[in-house]
Amino acid sequence: MSQNHSLAAAPVALQTSVQAWSTLCKPRITAMVGFAAFVGGLLGAGSSADLASLAEACWYIGLVGMASSVFNQLLERDTDARMLRTAQRPLVTGRVRARDAVWAGALLTAAGVLGLALRFNSLAALLTLATMMAYVLVYTPLKRFSSLNTAVGAIPGAMPPLLGFVAVAGEASGWAWYLFAILFAWQFPHFLAIAWIYREDYAHAGLKMLPALPRTEGMAGRQSLLYSLALLPVSLLPALRGDAGWLYVASALVLGLAYTVASALFALRETRARARAVVLVSLVYLPALYSLTLMDPLVRAVGARGTL
Image (cartoon, rainbow, N blue to C red; front, side, top):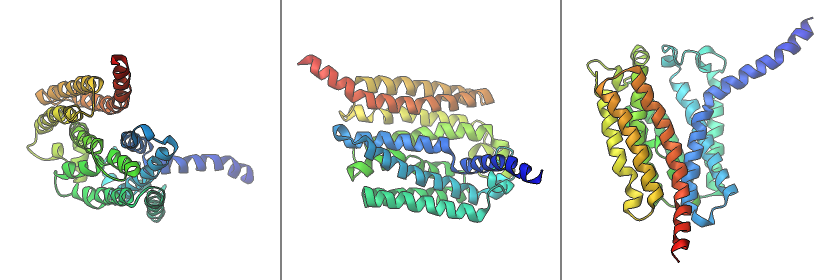
């Protein structure tokens, strides 16, 4: 009986362990990082893109992204324990030991950075390492001391497409900076709305997210609106500089206006439903804009052939 019980329990233990490590590595965020890096890399490579090589670069960038998530949760396990939203994370509950998380984060970082350095170029490797360090060593501890953490965290948060571009092009230019600027501005309404929804949790944990601070009613909505308005001209920079066509312009305008409307409604009255609407629109905005950005050169090429 004892042996049979042990055999039956083994798959459950394995599933629990896989779920715990999946929570630590945040696969959905890692997938978004990888996709953003892929878009940047495709635009950096142009018509000479080697998809297999680009996928490899994005894999290495994603590994470092996973490491960032692991180290972030490692440093925040005490505050995570005080928030309903994060109280069941594996480092809080003990399903993963802190020592194991340190080793995993270190190995993921080493694999990603060395892969970029050996297979691509040292600039991409150094920028990826710097991005991870800024996220873990600057943004994460700053959440305990200042609401400026959102602005600081938006810098490493905007790096994935630039990293993908640099990995294949060896330098940052044109689309690398456009995508960085777009992602930088996009983050503010997205994260302010999330912070507003969980403001009580953040306040209980002592994290200085803007909506969790005293006498800040209305500020999350107003700042969301300001940044969504700023995103509109920022997203049009590629067209203004002649690097994008009508499909990109139309897409950036439609998606940007939708984001602005959602943010404006949130600014008029901060409610959970309106905050969630901002988050929902933001999650549509980014993959839609990225996908249409990649389609734009094809549409322009077809149009150019049609005029010959």
